[in-house]
Image (tube, rainbow, N blue to C red; front, top):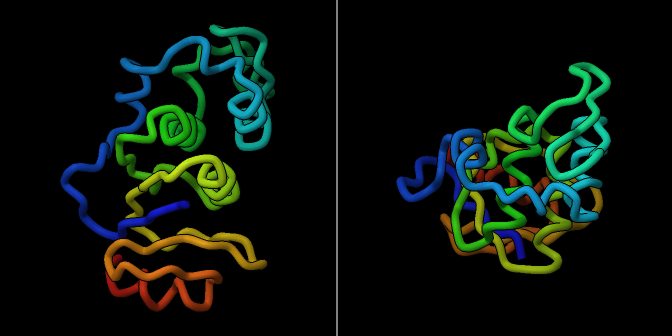
Length: 145
């Protein structure tokens, strides 16, 4: 399940780009879900563990991926840590729900992320409540961000 804590969370890793730079493992990049996230969010193709073909930047190293993709990868690969998912745009929301199908993950958000219009399930830790749609999520999240 996807667990969300809204607002300031001291234990959350805020600078996900720096954390990624010093902690990612090369093998992560070629895993199917990670390659799919990179393709979807950054419109880039994984060529190997150290090379990604970006339509904008050319061939880049994994550390040059967008902050959103790097944060998604960390959430997927380091589920025991809490990452600031406000580094992700709304185009990452569906990937957060996908990752949470396989494992319980907790993220920190400092904005209201738009999840899909159809039903979903997330636990808002601030109130320890499960919501299943944006209509119910917005007023709760709005109290904290």
